[in-house]
Amino acid sequence: MSAQIGTRKKDLLTLFDHSTEHIREILRLAAELKAKRCSNQYSKLLDNKTGVLIFEKPSLRTRISFETAIHELGGHVINLASEAVGIGTRESIEDVARNLERIVHLIVYRTFGHNKIESMARSSAIPVINALTDTHHPCQALAFGLTVAEARGDVRQNVLFAGDGNNVCNSIMVICAKLGHNFTFAGPKGYEPNGEIVKRCREIAAQNGGEINITNDLYKAAANAEVIYTDVWTSMGQEEQAQERKAIFADYQVNSALMAAASKDVLVSHCLPALRGEEITSEALDSKNSVAFEEAENRLHVQKAVIVQQFS
Ligand code: CP
Image (cartoon, rainbow, N blue to C red; front, side, top):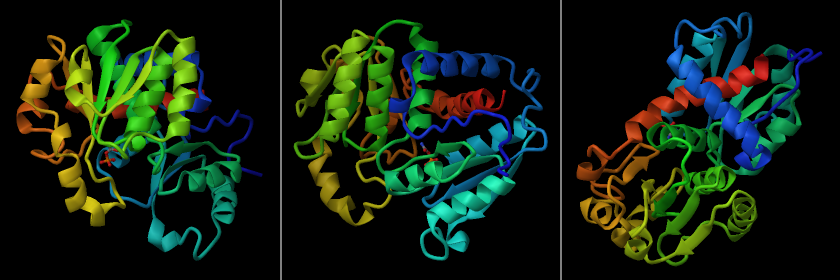
C-alpha cells in the first residue's frame, strides 16, 4: 500500500492543469502563510511525513525553499542524489516512483525532459511537484503571481517577458493567461516560446480577458509594460551555446533604458540566478523597482501553500 493513504493526489506538473480558481486559492493561502509564518495552524501538517527531493540540475532557491517549507510544516526531508539513484539507468523511472510511493509521501523533482516528470507522476500514488523541467517551472510562476499581487493588488497588468522563450517564460505566460494579465514576449527571431504552448495560453487568456502577444521588437513591447521579467539567455543544459546566445540576445537586455521606455514605476523581476551585465544590469536588478528577491522569498510561501493544499 502506498504511503499516501486516504488523500487525493494533486500533482503540480504545469499550471495548465490547474484552474484559475485553484491558482488564486494557492496565492491566497500563500499570502496567509507568509503572514503567519512560524506560528500558523498548519505547522505540524506534515508530522510523520517525508518528502523526497530529487534534483538532476543545480539549484539554490528551489531546493532551500522546499526543504524549509517541509521542515516548517513539521515534515522530514530526504535529498536523494540523482546520480546515486540512477533514474533511467540503474532503475526505470516507473520503478523508482513505485518504490517511493511505498515509503514517502511527496516527491519534488527537477529534471530535463517534461516527459520524465509525467512518467514519475503517472507511476506513483503520491503527489509529485515540478521543481523545473525543460518546459515548465510552475513554482516560479506561482511566486511571480504572488509578488505581482502584493505589489499591484488584483489589477490586470501588462507583463513583458524579455529574452528567451524558455521554461520560465512558458510558465509566466501560463499564469498570466490564467490570471487575466496581458502577456507579451519579446525576444530574437527563432527563440520565441513553443507555438503549441502559446496557442493554449491564447485560448485561456481569451477566457480571462487577457492577451498573449509575441514580438521581436523589445522597445515597442516595452511602451505599456507594467512588469518586465527576464531570465538567463542560456538555460541549464545549453551551456555549450552560451557564447552564441550572448550575441543573439544582446539587444534584449533589461536595463535602465528599457525601464525608462516602460510605464512609470514598472516592476522588474527575474527568477534568479542572474548573470548581471548580460540579460539584466545590476542597475535594474538592484533598483527600487526590482521585486526579484521578494519573488525568491515567495517561492517558500507558494510551495508551502501547494503542500498544505495537498495534505489538509
Ligand atoms: N529560480 C530557480 O529555480 O532558482 P534555482 O535554480 O536556484 O532553484
